[in-house]
Structure formats: C-alpha cells, structure tokens
Length: 304
Image (cartoon, rainbow, N blue to C red):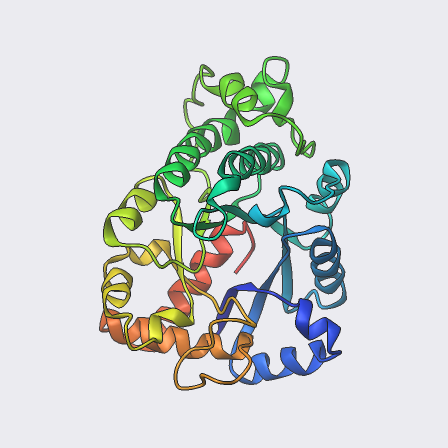
C-alpha cells in the first residue's frame, strides 16, 4: 500500500533539523510521496530545495498565500521557481475571510495573479478557502474555463494568447486579462480531457460547496480534521466525493488526527486520515490509498 500526502509544510521540520527523520517515518508508514507546499518567499525557496534534495519522495508547490498581501513579493523569482525540477503545482494560494476579511480585495487580487501564473505554467492550483466560498467558486470557475481551453489550444493560438505561452508563467498578469484572452478561443476538435485544474485542500466545507468544486473538475482533499469527534458532517461529505476526485493530506505540522492529538503532525499520519476516509466510505483502506495515489499523480501530471 502506497500513500501520497498531498499537502505538508516543512518549515518547522527544516528549522528543527529533522527533515530526514520525518521522511523516514513517512516511508515506514507507507507514505511514498509527499507534496511539500510553499506559501511565502522563504517557504517557496525551502520546498524547491527539499524536492531537489529528496526527489524520490518529495515534490513541491510554490505560491503566495492570502497572508502575503502586504509582504514583499518577487513575481519573477516565483516564475523561475515554478519551472524548477520537482515543482508540480502552484500553491498554497486562496482566500480566507475568517481572520482578515478587511483584506478581502487584496486577497482576491493576489489570488487572481496566482491563478494567472498557474494558467501560464499549466500547473494545477492548491487552494485554501475559509469563509469565502462564493468568491472562491467564482474565481475557480473562471480558472476552470481557461484551464480547459488553454491546455489544447495555446500552441495554435500563441499570437492571440501571449499570457499563457508554455513555460512562461507570469505572476504579475491581471487575472481578468488572462481570462479575456482565452474565453473566445475555439476548443480543440479532438483534444482529450485536460488534467484536473487543482484541489481544494484541507476541505472543511459543506456538501453544496464540495459539489460546486467537483462540478468544476477540482479535487477535494481531507486532512486530520476528518477524524475529529465533531466532524461527522465532514465524514459524510468525504463519503459522497466521487472516487476520482478524492485526495488525502496532513497539512502538517498542524491538525494532527485522532488518536494522535497532542503530538506534532507529520506525513506519516496521513495513513490515519486514509483510514478514517475509508471507514466513512465503507471501503478498505487499501482501496482509498490506491485511488488517492492515482488521483494525486493525475492532478500533478506525474507518472504513477
């Protein structure tokens, strides 16, 4: 049984000098691959470095998250990191109105720039959303439309779609400019379905929000929260997600699943998340492991 932890933060482990030990415990628990996620200048540099140091076990995602609206940002550097070996996604990015609703306009502007860069790089997005369902769906709906068209039409329409040339991500292009560049492009006549446009990570929403995301082609990822005593409604959502759009994660070092509460969360514990999701769906844990592994490889455009 092989597991894929699709969302882990390594800042604390790196600072404490215990990355090797964390990875060894993950391997022992059957966690063969982990996506190390950035969200700021420092963490983006870190995850790219780690993915290059541990290519057999780590891949990386880079981006500027919603708490970076007032922080120094280097779009050119982010564009370079997005093309580095081992980088498979743009994230963590998104919206959070729970603690900082007053920055909502700036969050949307930053989120839009990240979506524009992801479209240009043709890399899926790893999205955070809290108390922002309506705006998240609106922006991801536009991204999904662009994603479906650009994946098979960019080469044929390079002159009319300069913002999404292959291998040319631009994290300073206004999102609406990208959207309007592509909305009238004709679809490719015989194109196969594109890979998934992204994932809503650490899902805590309701069934209606999940259904909207699924309809847009996004995957839904569950963290240790799904094991909490009060998470019955969330386990019901996990039961309903189509098998082909289901993922598991730790979001470590936070959100340690039961029965390990009180310990620092780490990728090895994604095995417990898979157990809880499997129980909710009434299937063997091996089936969840196999399905989520295949889903993660498809999302990140990787070989299984």
